[in-house]
Amino acid sequence: MGAAGNEEGRIDAVIVGGGIGGSALATVLARNGLVVTVLEQQRTYADRVRGEYMAAWGVEIAQRLGLFDALNQAGGSMPRWAVQYDELMPPQVAEQHKIDLDNMVPGVGGALCLSHPVACETLANEAIAAGATMLRGVENVRIQTGSEPAVTYRLNGEDSTIRCRLIVGADGRNSSVRQQAGIELRQEEVTNVVSGLLVKDAPEWPQDTFALGSESDVMYFVFPQGDDRVRMYICGTPDQRDRFAGPDGTTRFLESFRLKSMPLGDHLAAATPIGPCATLGGEDTWTESPYAEGVVLIGDAAGYNGPIIGQGLSLALRDAELVSKALLENSNWSRSIFAAYGEDRAERMRRVRFTAAMHAALFCSFTPEGVQRRGSFLGRLAEGQDQSLMWQLIEPVIGPYNLPPEAFDQSYRERLLGTQEPQSVAS
Image (cartoon, rainbow, N blue to C red; front, side, top):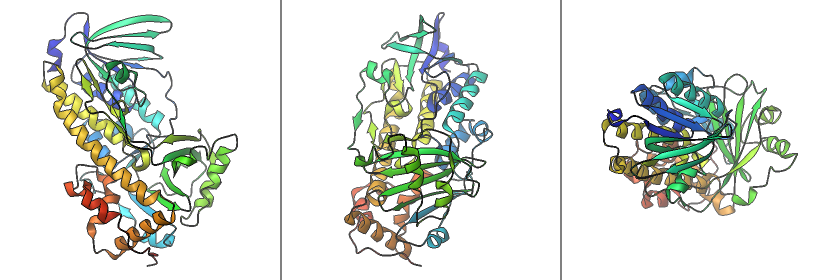
């Protein structure tokens, strides 16, 4: 086991960041006897207006890691059904073709929708229960990479240093660990932005269903969160970044849900906001090699998928699974043990980037050409002659590993984004 190389005064791992990926990894390592300290900047986990949908393939990983039961018992909702609405078809047609997520990934009943702060708190508590040390309110983290890794940090006005065998950067999109380690973050051109809001007093929304759709100049998402709470998102083009800015932004966001293509839009628009209304970039980023000597990156720190297909939590758990496997199967923690992780992540991120780009082109492009493209896709999908068109809709559910390689190549892109005449899906 990896702990065999530990020596007096030096712990096994310092994980910088106690969010989903960091706390999940800490739990797995601590349960296997490793000495782990987690450094978390937040004293109380905040609503980040993202990270609240775990796809079925992520649920399967959570099950394998022994984390699902705690998350499932923390509240939230586990919807079985997904409905793809659109202004080009009557709502009842969309509902007749809703997607059943139950057992789409064997042994998984659906997706998991759970408050991000609650999920983080739940996993942090699991890490602590497993024996990890969790320090919150940490500031000014400085790292020393190489053969003698060390982390210096400030807590309650005092500086401390921890020597360790490995530093794990799980500190999010603007990762200080990544920057200090000199690992370059690469980025695709931004194709969309995403705005979100959490509401309550929406009891009519079915907790067993999440929805997405396109109408006018927005792509929208609705995710139940248990009881009468719902997380709502609107995805738009980059020039809409300030659409919901200002003191009345929340009101304008809610009014945007008075939609013709989706039932219950008026009900959602009348709900009570219980969190911030914030807008996030929809860019895709990645690192060519998410590790260096003495340091490895996981989760958003290693590069993140645009939120238009909601893969962040599942990607982070897969990172935690692969990194923990590398550490637990090797006594020598040189950078070479992360080669398989790096290769897996590179192909995984390429595939989700592909799917996210296709989603943006199909459902978040509101020009006449974009509407034509979407109508052609939906019409061909309804005809049922090319079953592979469904790959685009189910990949965000079953993940990048469970489709054939041709689901992520140029020929599929060309077929998916064909230029046939637009069709109204009326039956």
